[in-house]
Image 1 (cartoon, rainbow, N blue to C red):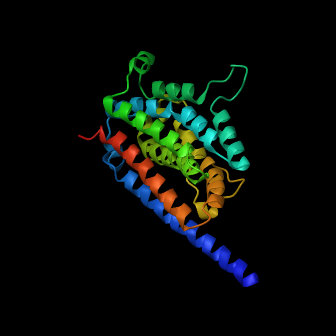
Image 2 (tube, rainbow, N blue to C red):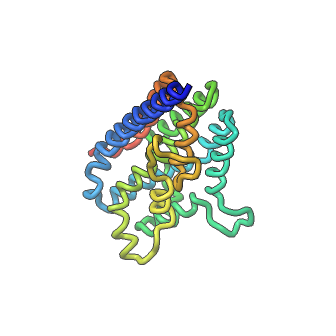
Image 3 (cartoon, rainbow, N blue to C red):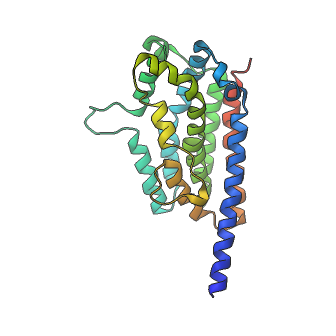
Length: 249
């Protein structure tokens, strides 16, 4: 029995390490995208163009989480998703800005005007990304089990977000330093969405990706589950790459 238990633990660890290797490859492919590969060369106007369109993707955070919550079965994962969603709107009194308001504050600190923010409209490419993301979320929520939804929430909503903002931070940081205003959205999201490997994630990990990763690790119970994780992860990355493809040239 002990040998069987050790064998089971070894197989589970092997699955998580394979999943981590796949996830790492996704991150590397995102970082190779031209916007990120040449992030330090973006001028102020180009950076704002990217971030103003990226805001529309960020506005999907609550709908995607709400759709995912409707599809989750595991009570621990469900409670965690609710907790993360509620952090977007920090209090009930209306006295604290939402994360989306803090995003706008950061855009203004980076040189956008409020009129520029509110007058911006999603491009055709961004609109297609929004539609594809919502369709994917709805399809995954209708699947049995939690692997697909947890993969979406962790990769789309946390891991890739941290990678994107972390890479663009090198262009943002000098502007915040110049104005003397602390980032209220981009830097904090880079910090608390930060990538924690599935094999190391715990229920009390310090990041959203870590805590979601712990729930996902429990759901990756066999090779079929890992295969579904990889399929969903690939779709998430493809959507994100298509979004950033509009900024080529």
